[in-house]
Amino acid sequence: MLKTKEALVTAFALFSLFFGAGNLILPPLLGFKSGELWWLVAIGFCLSAVFVPILGILAYAKLQGTIFDFGKKVSPTFSLVYSLLVYAISISLPSPRTASVTHEIAIAPFFQTSSLLTSIVYFILVFIFVLNRSKILSIIGKLLTPAIILILLLIIGCTIFSFDISFGNTVFTNPFTGGILEGYQTFDAIGAVVVGGVIIVSINIRHHSLPYDNKKALIRKAGWWAGLGLLLIYSGLIFTGSLMHGQFDADVSRTALLSGISIKTLGNTANMFLSVLVSLACFTTAVGIVTGTADFMQHLFKGSKQAYLLTAITGCVLGVIMGQFNVGYIIAVALPALMFIYPITIILILLNVVPTQLASPIVFRAVVITTIIFSIPDFLGAIPSLALKEGAFSFIPLQQYSMGWVLPALAVFILANGVAKKQMNK
Image (cartoon, rainbow, N blue to C red; front, side, top):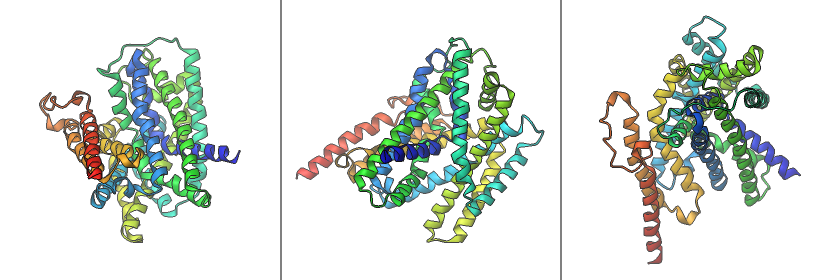
């Protein structure tokens, strides 16, 4: 009974970790655009936004380490650069996005104030909480997630039973890869690498006498349960969005669609309640990101309090600068960075999950370097100002789907294992 209870508690913690309020705005619009192929889009989205992040937690269970351990087989220098890059992206994009979501969902519909003012006040409060590390956040977090889940389940249920099961036409050329790439915007795979270790540390503290295999089994069970919960919620929201094809304008924004669906299904009062909950959940996410980044820099500079303070200030200033822009703009700005860092993160997670004999240092180096090289065209192609000639990298398999790194990484993984095996047999 204790094992089941612990697995459920851990699963709920993992669910809360990944189910960021900013992620709520992604699935409904994805479904709205996917039409009758919503299920194919949902599979792609859940592959990159659920399956890979959960594998990241399983990798942590195996490693029992930190973010440095994910890339240490490549080299210590690579691991440090990768860690710095991931944290830099985290405080520059997903953290400010929480302020933007808060403004568009909870402030703009009710108050005639600027997004800059919202962003300034928002990150002043974030800075205060980061410095004080208030336990109120963890208490609020435990209450927020169940409340948001309950409202979302009501929205999904009301939609299914109140609206006709009919679909529009999809706007995606390739719905499956469209879903995968939109899943990048959840930042959940990066989240697994950045803060997944918190779960491992918590389990080690609470169950320090528990054998390694038992801890790993506990995390594995909790990981799959959390993944199932995410799969159901994300799929339900995508399906809900797909049924709304005739209810909103084709150019509706992500935040407007989420608010509109909640009004149509639950009414204005529930929408206001959802707005408050989403805003608070966004706030806890921003505090968590800035605090985690500041902790990392403090550890890097041998416990320096000045490093912690400067990082917190930098994170909040970046939040004010980026947070004043609308959600759509931040998502567009994030795309090039995600097209580069996400494939590397996915590969590091997969290499740390596969059996150790298939992931020697030689294999790690070869596959990661290959992924970096073949992610560059996707990175360049996502920068509009470069105006690359269409089809410039079409000779790379799957490049037209922004997945040009997949087959080269797989081929090098097989070849590198063959080389490693020959070296062992000599």
